[in-house]
Amino acid sequence: MDLFFAQQADVGVVRTLIHAAARGPGPSPNGVVEEIPNEFVAALCAQHQQLSGVAAFDPIGNPNAPDQAKRAFEAGFVAAALMPGCMPDAAKADDHRLFAFYELCTSLGRPVFIRNGGNAGPDMTYADPLHIDRLAAAFPQLKIVVSYAGWPFAQQMMGVVFRRQNVWVCPDHYFPGMPGEQDYLAALRAWGQDRFVFSFYYPMAAQGQRLDQILSLDLPASVLDRFLYGNAAELFQLPGL
Image (cartoon, rainbow, N blue to C red):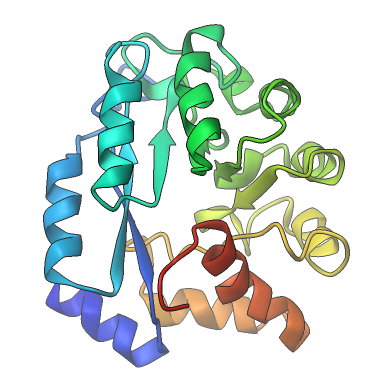
């Protein structure tokens, strides 16, 4: 944690969202999603005012998830996180068994991170942005943040962002430097500049290294301001920003 905060100070970070994780079997028999308990994240946020927590849930395996999410929001968590394809009972993002949870988050105006990209489940269909498109249509007031930004279906994901006003993307380590970069860049430079949320995806790379990669793209200052700061500050209603 000392190294983490030292790197944050070096690059000028003013607020960080810390993401919990619900334990699951992972996208393959050889992969396991290790649990990062909500209680652990809450304790970190209590110790460090520059941190804001994102609570993780398994609404299919835990019927009490909506009630637990409500209490988590009351305790200061700014958003919820789901990894549907990595849960013990793997699901797509638009699975109806998740709808009660989505309804709760919609009613409270809280964003939901949904892992829908990369190794998002047992096979590549779990990363298909079509599931996010259907979910966004079913819950037009739900604020949906797509972790991994639908990769490798970058172009299709940008199509969903174009047609659904309640969808944001967080490309994490899939942008820049991976196939699909030009599709993300085209959206960022035009109508999508208000719909991208930056992530260091630490510790996959040093925080300064990730920031340098973004700055090397020569994006306009106004776009960088939205991508690195403004979109997250508004979307998560972060205090003091």
